[in-house]
Length: 406
Image 1 (tube, rainbow, N blue to C red):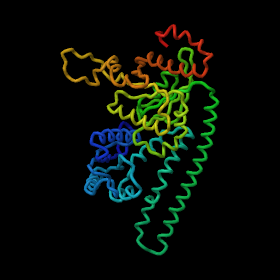
Image 2 (spheres, rainbow, N blue to C red):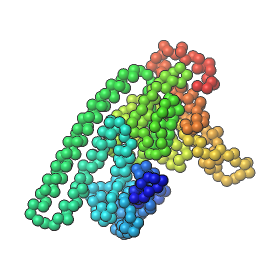
Image 3 (spheres, one colour):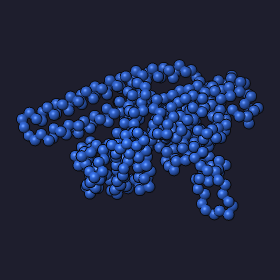
Image 4 (spheres, helix red, strand yellow):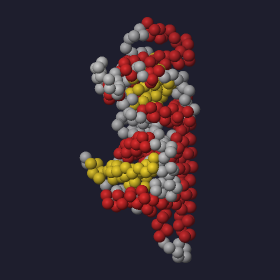
């Protein structure tokens, strides 16, 4: 354990692979994200171990030599936990714990642990618990490795096997119970969504930690929890927002992430239903992040998987305040860098030429916020009028005062 600023962190090392499907640059991005995940969970990454392999070793994920190198470092530096960037199979977990004599955590378990820390409502806790049990079920055998040390002896195998089978039944029963509980809550939430009437519903989506909750607070003038950590918000939050004289419902949803565990996609079905049933999506991206293009692609892939990729979308590039808008000298022939692109410059990039309406803002400092509200108003108004054509006269003022600050 390591104590920093009064908080105790687990000392960890991170392990990742360079493969045919994942080059060195891509792995570096994943490892940076893994370190951020580890810090969010309460761990301090002491070192990274990287190996080039055509594919993960079926026994220990990394090769024999790298396993010995990691074991030596753990022994000499009193490391508590080893975190792997990919999901490990039950046999790999078992072999690695035996070889390294340390706690082994893969990316899936790490994300599940963060979700467990962040879940506030009983519904979110039930969702996370279901995902944890579904992850745990095929890995129960490694929890009984102490029985392997009892060599031979009549009656020694039976109790171990019986105990494992008993635990499996308990876990299966718990999974069944949680699924039933979530179905009941899902029906209640579906009823709640139906009871909201025909008011236009807008859902905030995006990669984790891109500023969705900050934008939610700015638009709705509410106090949704905000923190510069991954998955700060798990519980779905719905607020009524009025721009001009046009009301609509705005929903803040859980952030997405690359390599999102399949268990979470299934258990957070109701949260994804909010996205599926929304009339308009606000896709928020952190433009200050060097991998924001990959983040956008990851979110779009999940949208496609849940059948929400064809919905009207407003693309919001957030955190423009993280750049210094220094105007380049005309004689400066150095390549344009992200640090000297102005707001006008961003509007000339490929991002503003996408098929969706696009706006560049700072939700925290409310930079260019009036343009964001104006575009949002236009999109919601279009949906509202298609639903209530007889209400169009209420919004005639907007056509006359298009340039006004909403």
